[in-house]
Image 1 (spheres, rainbow, N blue to C red):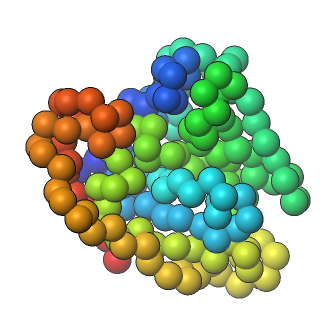
Image 2 (tube, rainbow, N blue to C red):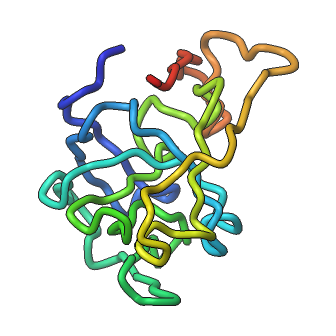
Length: 165
């Protein structure tokens, strides 16, 4: 599936927040981060430019959280608590979008997810960001084609997406 520059629909868990996002380079920008917040949140993100998100419903139902320098702003649904996106500190002209919120995409669709060094953040060190590891997902028992792993309902696909190097 080529998703570069395609509109991707998404929503939070309860559906109160619905949006469309144009991803900067499709699903090729997948990543995790080692900063204190991302370690606890555990989400896999992809990039969209600042103007690349359109809220279809529930923008007023988003709360935000900032920590440390306050530069990054993390958004989540006030009703279900799901993190939908954040304005990036390392690239303030971009959002990071939670792939689990994108329709038809699951973090478990990716065999490998690069992990970026958020502890030694590029904006703190003056050095370029670096990959400090890779998360691997190997299913013990592949899910049936008709099972949607995110909702536990029938109908989704278990398409594997490989990150570009």
